[in-house]
Length: 189
Image: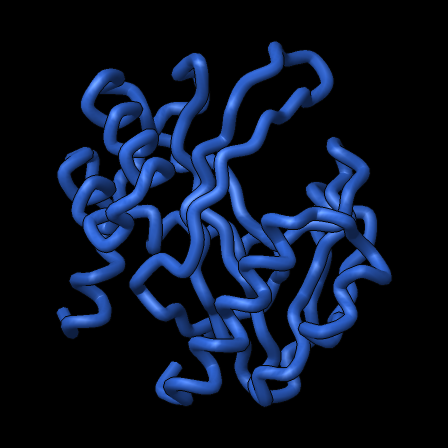
């Protein structure tokens, strides 16, 4: 097993999620740690008042565009991501969800979270609850062609500086800004 494989190994241990959040020394990071420390089922979608999720800012191989999906249930343009379903390694969750939702294989993840975002969701047939989303930067291979699945109605590559054409989500804008900064700093993913 390579060191990258070890970083992306699934785990039921909430200490793994807590370690991923270690660099966030602010009120938001504290809210995540409180959730983890208070709810042993924080990685399960049934956990209330909310639960951990993992998502990915998927950028093209040049690092100029990001892939957004028109979410089938929520009807909004979002980055790929989803429920942890018991996996406390949220980098693994984000990579798994990005692969499943985009149909792109060979994605490479920067294993340190870029951004945290707590947002309320109100999916059809469920109660309103919070997603404690841990967000990562993911690079697609050259000439990646997305293949939408049942979770999206459409997918588009969008320039990082043109997200306002599809969304008004300030959390996604901040994620794109942080992703662009990371890409400028390191071309290693």
